[in-house]
Length: 160
Image (tube, rainbow, N blue to C red; front, side, top):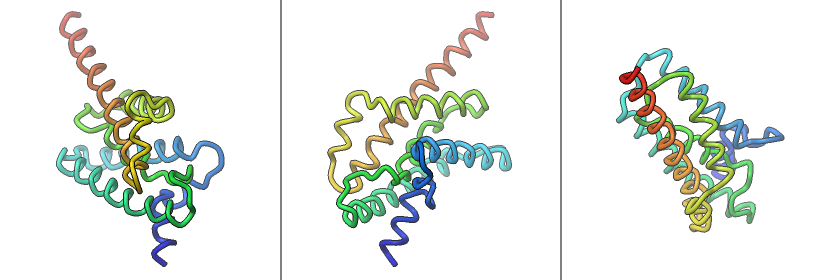
């Protein structure tokens, strides 16, 4: 039962088993979920946003460690809970808008696939920590890109 539950959660309720690009699918589903949550509430408090990221990360470390142990595969491609945490981190403290959602999803996927230094190094961490850590740093990098774009837009609006 524990193993089945871990697999269900780590795979994003089986999104990770959709053929093709499971990480991208999980990122898109996370972005759509974030959009819907914001659309219906009109505001997501930063403390709730951070709490969700922390909760997903802790659950991700535990469930991905169980799945890795059961399969003998350090980071199975169908484990996509790490994409959910990283994608949510991308949007933390970023102005809400469709453009930021699209750019944030693209930026996160680019950093998650490209894995610039030291993202790739984080994959070597033990248990579920390595599975989660590289995506969290990709989320931080993508967040920084969105922050810079937001600042540049504000500067150009003031100049123009």
